Amino acid sequence: MDVCSAICVSAEREALKHERRDVACYVLIEMRERGAACKALQATSLQGTELMDTSEGPSGGLTTYLVVYVIILVISGLQILIAYSNVEGSRIFMRMLALAIVQAGLAITFFMHMKSEKRNLALFLLPATVFVLVMMNMIWSDSFRLLNMRPFAH
Amino acid sequence: MSEANLTMSSPVPEMREAPAFAIPHKKLVMWLFIISDAITFGAILFAYGYLRNATTDWPRPFESSSVLNAYIMTFILVTSSLTMLIAIRAAKSGEKPKAIVWSLLTVAGGLIFALLHLKEWLGLIGGGLRLFANPWGSGLFGAAFFSITGLHLTHVVAGCIAITVVTLGYKRGRYDSMDLEIWGLYWHFVDMVWMFVVPFVYLLNVKR
Image: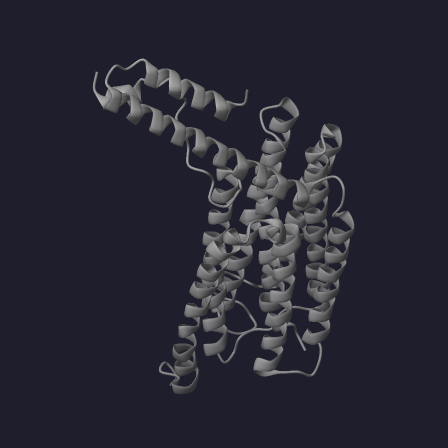
């Protein structure tokens, strides 16, 4: 007998101990709900275990890790080439940023296993983080004001 | 006997709410720490961007030797992420000695990274770089450079200590493969931050 079935049986025993029918029913319903919750919890735990097994299981993944590892190092090399190219100003910054975001995306997706986690986790964590980082871009107008108006220049 | 007492004296163990994201709570806590830390690094990089953009004489002190050093550091840090992944994989499949060796290799990678970082710092300090002064241009450069790279270096050293402690605990049976995986998340995050530090702090400031 599994744990959840045991809960249901003990629920019936508890209910039978009580002479008052309403109390017995209350106990029975509550314990059966607990039995159902137990099954739901077990199902969720199993699902979680399966998810983690796919992300870290011994059956695969090393080739993927190696491919991602090489891509990240190649992108780092590309950034150095861009640094010594004739590109200037905001273009060089945007190219560096785009490549860094690709590297970070690969690291989060494959090294940190976001790909094999429940989608809820990514939806819970990433939009809020991106929102805060995007809102920080409000500083640029003041930065350009300092550059162009040069309030401290003599 | 009241209904409340009946419930309290129940022989059934207290039921817990199902985990929301099908991951252990410890792992969720690490993810929450990582996003808060990502925003901290984001803020410090934005502050650096603000200063760099608004300063006309921002220094470009990095010679090609510094860029090569930064690339070697990147190589070591990304490789240590790979060794951490291999360690976790071994731990999940029950190969304890292999997991311990690869975890300690990760720590060794972190320590080599820290030594190269200190070498870079000492070279720049020898060239005249101070926290609020340098011979090349705006004095704010030193504050920005040491703040960003110092915070990252602190994370690397903290990661080395944490992974060593968890690996030794795993060897003794105090921690399991999940604990290694959770600290692996932290280590990959530190690696990811470096992917933003190198282009913005080093490569945008190369000497031409």
